[in-house]
Amino acid sequence: MKIKEIVSALERFAPLPLQDGFDNAGLQIGLTEAEATGALLCLDVTEAVLDEAIALGYNLVISHHPLIFKGYKSITGKDYVERCILKAIKNDIVIYSAHTNLDNAQGGVNYKIAEKIGLKNLKVLEPKENSLIKLVTFVPDAQADSVREALFAAGCGNIGNYDSCSYNLKGEGTFRAKEGTHPFCGTIGELHHENEVRIETILPVYKKAEVIKALLSVHPYEEPAFDLYPLQNDWLQAGSGIVGELDESETELEFLKRIKKIFEVGCVRHNKLTGREIQKVALCGGAGAFLLPQAIRTGADVFITGEIKYHDYFGHEGDILMAEIGHYESEQYTKEIFYSIIRDLFPNFALQLSKINTNPIKYL
Ligand SMILES: [Zn+2]
Image (cartoon, rainbow, N blue to C red; front, side, top):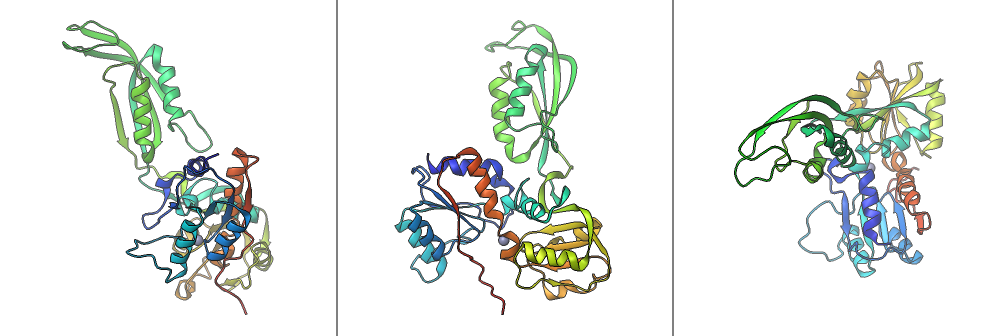
């Protein structure tokens, strides 16, 4: 199996267009035409992680955090990133990273954290805006089924846990084919009336090109009519953070102690305990403090993230319990997401979670 097959499996799960503007998710180093000898899964790429891959004989390293974030004018090994780049190239290792695209994808980083805590009824805390469009097209009755199916296969019609969503209205289309055309029905030079179905469906903006290609390939008309509308709807299935509920409420202390254990946190930092019961939990892996206002708005009892600044703690004890569990600690189980995506598709492929703790922060 080629490395590019694994990469495309990861990108079907966490499409690159879902990444945030500052990010550099995707292929970092290497040629994906190579046969994959095995994949090592990690949170951060370090020299020790690359040595681990070399020792295993694996030529693919999949990380959550991208190794490369900036442009380089020289690569001389003056810092660990440059040394990793050199080591990877020297040893024919491909490095691939799924970062904020995996944070924002359904089933991604925050869903994994929610699973570890045991949350139900999960909702995205800050759904993506301006990410959906509506497609409307007009198809002869007899071809409506095949056009709909092609649109669904290309990525249209997904709303929540439903697929194949569309609205279909019967009506009549008209056209007159001019000289030199090859009309599917009707006669050149004569006004034609055709019974058509108006098909409406929804799609993510990033699938636009793929969907139009599918539409044009299956629509019977020489010049298919279709409209694309921008939508104001938030994309409820993609975005930052998660809010969910515990089956049974816990005291603040019970909850924080449980979190400390699950995520193996050296020290959980939190604001003042006020005696509230914890039932509704908002969370975001990594540096998620920007979601505090959304967590408060949603009525969560607690907000958990990897990093919170000193000043962000002030004034919220009446709103919400805030708990900071460390960046690495919060995202360490991301490796398991990579594992299950690849394991499901390629059951016999050599695959291993890195045994190296790459957390640069230690607790005294
Ligand atoms: Zn992170």
